[in-house]
Every structure is written in structure tokens, then in C-alpha cells.
Amino acid sequence: MGRGQGQAQVQCPRPLGRAGPAALHRPGPRGRPRRAPHGRALLGARPDRHRADRGPDARAEGQPHDRHRHAQHAAGRSRVRSHGLLHGRARRGGPSRRQAGRVRRHGDDLHQARRPSDRGLHHRTVRLRLRRAAEAPVAETSPVETEPLGPVGADLDRVAAAAVGAADTGIIVVDPDGVEVTRSHAAERFRDARHGDAVALEVIERLLRAALGGIHAEEELALFGPPRETLVVRAAPLVDDAGAVIGAAAYVRDVTELRRVEAVRRDFVANVSHELKTPIGAMALLAETFLGSNDVEVSRRLAEQLVQEADRLAHIVDDLLDLSTVEAQEHPTREQARVRTLVDEAVERVGATALARGIPLSVQPIDDDLVVACDPVQIVGAVTNLLDNAVKYSEAGEAVEVAAEVADGTLVLAVRDHGIGIPSRELERIFERFYRVDKARSRATGGTGLGLAIVRNVAQAHGGEVTVESIEGEGSTFRLVLPRAGASVEAA
View 1 (cartoon, rainbow, N blue to C red):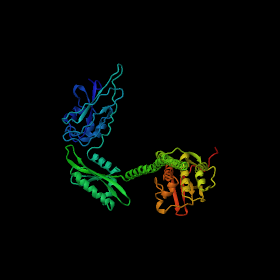
View 2: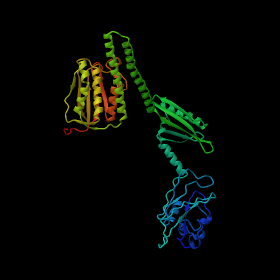
View 3: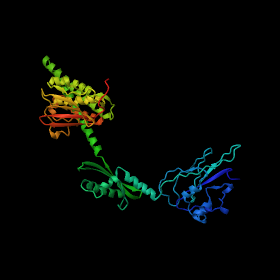
View 4: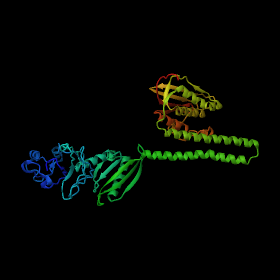
């Protein structure tokens, strides 16, 4: 049977450090490829090239193949592509396990590769069943293209060490004697550590010793800094397939932000419960008193107080809904809005309260063409909260001023009052949820302690910020700083 007729075989070498059978490497007479049984040729042998590159007896002595040269020798034949997952070094006494190669040839049938036996055979025989058309000549084979098989041995160790080093978690790996093998870049801070890191290093070493004894351990520690941090250190033994301890690894996670968020959530739930409980309790007491009263005048006063407490409860719920909406909407929908329109709407909302308290609202002239890219509903709500806060902490006759300024590519909406001011020690906390400088005054005026927290979240959602300047006894100035959209806009 001539070449190309019937079935052809492709020899795919697997160089794993052991020589294959000499019969598969020995060239045929006169330097020609040795024929396989039944007249099938061994593709890709090309002994002449082997003789030139490696000497005349290299293949006859059963030396292992070089896979890169084999890829060159097989050029001009069939197209072979190997797929597989590398699981580590070669097993003792035999080659590493790989998935069988996949053969791709246009217009030909594909057949799965035959796996080697367990007797040290280092080749896989790939069969190509060639189809012949009724009147067409014998199909020609395609060039061979072999993909790299990936790292093995020491290369795999370097890849693993690089993967550990790139981790954003602090990782330290030691051998059975406690000698460090590798560590991540995030764990470098614990080398020659001082102060708080020295405390963490002591915990890491203690847990690693326990892990080398086969014990899983975890510990959380708070470092008072600076900066203040909360770290979770966990150590675990590393075992082989037989269950023997071959080392240990320590993992250090910075959970500072996670613990802060958890604390804020707990405080928020506690504050909400308290804020809702107060008006509900007052309403229940007023209703009970109202039911037992026969005096018309007393009943009227009780009814008025019930309405006030109901309004207060509704205000708390509204603020909670506004705050949750702002926090959930990380990227608010923006549109070009006239600054003058935004300010006028906020002033109108607070106008009735300010008039009732005898506090005039003064709006500085604002260019009608000045615009800002924003969520109008959120910005109006933020300015309303700033105005409402200024009115609550001002005395009758003291004006509250509103101004819009353009500076350094930003729009600054400023609200200035001449009220009681804020003590300097309180300035850092006034934007916290439910925090009040004067709790008695805030409760008397119906404040929930959520207004400034809403303003801060709105500013951050728009890529801006809110700042405050205050002198106790003289008043405060709040500034809502937003990225500026443009200097003018066509009239609508």
C-alpha cells in the first residue's frame, strides 16, 4: 500500500525525562523513515535531520526526544493540537497524565488519540482516516502546528511563587521546619515589623507553629495604630496526598473597612429603632390620655400633639427613604439643570417654616444661564436640608443666606446662617446619621439627624463634597461643591 493510501499515523513525542523504546527511534535503512506494520509510515521521523542535529546514533541509543525539534520535523504533515490540564510534576515511574491530543484537519474525519500504555511508552499515536473522493487524487496532509505544553517542574514552582506574590492578601508559606518558603507582597510589611505589625507578626508565628502540628487556627486582632486596623490571621497545615504535613501557610486579611461598615449598620439599626420608638410611644400615650378625657379643651390640645408626633414620624420615614434611595443609586441620572431654578425650589420648600420662625431667607443674585449636570431631585433635596438645618439653629430675625459661586471648575452652593454655631469638637461628626449637636433643640424643632447625612451622600454620588466652617456663637457656612457642567445653556 503506497504512501497516503489508507490510514496514516503521527508520532507525538512526550519528553518526560525517560527514553522511549529504541525500536521507535531507530531509523530505517538508507536514512528512510521506518515503516509501521501494515505499510503505514511514521510521519515526522525525518532521520536525516536528526543525524545532522544530534549525531548518527542519537536516536538509535534511545535518547529522549526534544519536543521543539519534533515540532519542526513534523512540519508539512498533519495539523496536531494538544489540549490538557497540567496538574504538576510527572508521577514517579511514569509520565504525567494529560488529556489525549486532538487532531484538526480540514475535510477529514477526526479520531480520538490512542492513549499510551503504562509500560513507559512516550508516544501517542494519532490516526487520521483519510477520505478519498471518487475521482479526486489522494488528499495531501496539512502542516503540523504543535502548541507549547506549558511549564513543568521548576517552572511550575516559579509560577506558583509568582501567584502567591501577586495576591492582595498577606500570605506566608513555611516548610515543615518552619523555614519561610515564600510570601506575598502584601505580607512584606510583617518582615522586621515594629509597633502594631510586630504584634501581628507574633500572632502569625504562633499560629504557624500550631499549623505545623496539624491544627487549623484563626485569630482577630485590633491594632490601635496609627492607623487603626483590624486584621484576621488564619493558619492551616499543608498536607500531601498521604495526609503528611509538608508545611503551613498563614493568611492575613485586613477587615478594617468591613468591621467599620458592620458597626455603622448596627448603629443605624439601633438609632432607627430609637427614633421610631419615641414618636410611636408618645402617640400611644397621647391617645390613651385622649380617650380618658372629657374636657373639650384638653382633648383639642391632645389632638394637636398627636398630629405633631404623626408629622414627626412621617418626617423620619421620609428621611430614611431619601437616604436609602441616595445610597442605593451610586450613579444618579444627570441632566443639565439651571442653578437658579434649583435654589428657588429649595427656598420655596423651606419658606413656610422660616416665615413661621421669623427668619428671612436671602438669595444672592445667580446668573440665569448658570447650569450644572446633576439629578435635580437630589440636589434640590440636599439644598433643602441645608436650609432647613440653618433655620432650625437660627434665632428669630437672623437671616439665612444662599449663594452660588463658581471656582476652579466647580459650582459651590453656599448656605450661611448667623445662629448658635457648632463647637469645633463636633465638626467631624455632624455628617453622621442621627447625630445632633443640640439634641434638645433638634427634637423640639422636629429634626431627625439624617439631613446632613443625606447631603453628604448626594455630594459624593455627584463626584463632589460638602464642607462646613463654623464659629461657635457666630454661625455656620455649609458649602455643597459639585463639578461644573458649563457656563451657559440655551433658554428652554
